[in-house]
Image 1 (spheres, rainbow, N blue to C red):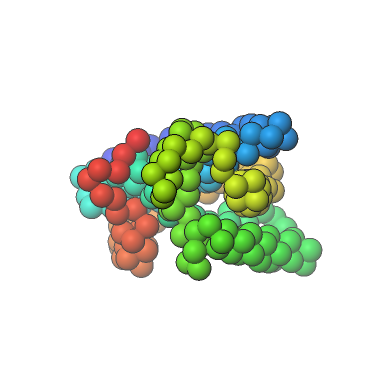
Image 2: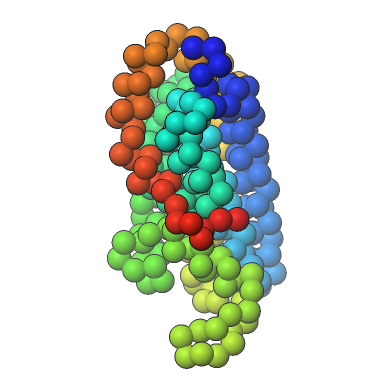
Length: 236
């Protein structure tokens, strides 16, 4: 198995930790500017926060990527795409469930599992709260455009220049709340289990056979392709 992975296992653990810690910093900044009345900037920073959580989904999946294969190309393209990082949050519940298995309290303490269930319900509810602005599907990829509007002056549908400060306060609040939910959930697990995560991926690398890796990749293929396929013009 040596040399088959796109990225060293140590880098995967470091990547997960870096995304998590940067999400904490970005969320802190979003809350700060929100408290100062800068609702458009708060929205934009909150979306960047969410992208960092989306990156975690991608980085975790690198354990099963090989040099030059299609999955490798999908991950590389997705990592450069803002919309793909937001789209990755569609499987956030799966990531959170997986991370929870790192904790010794998982399936041993009823309160821990209840907390997990509540967090996932809150994530669903707070995501649905974006419907007035994103539509019934609440497609988080659409937040990329709103993030840009929060940073820059732009044209509205009437053809007039609109300053970022004119972004709806309630929309900004809803996006910050969702970003806060995502970060709090990840922080709840990783603050005590980041070392266990790094140990687990090392163990997986050593124990999985080639056949097992192929089986895992096969089951994940459709999901990953749907999440991380990008257009030619979509990049940093």
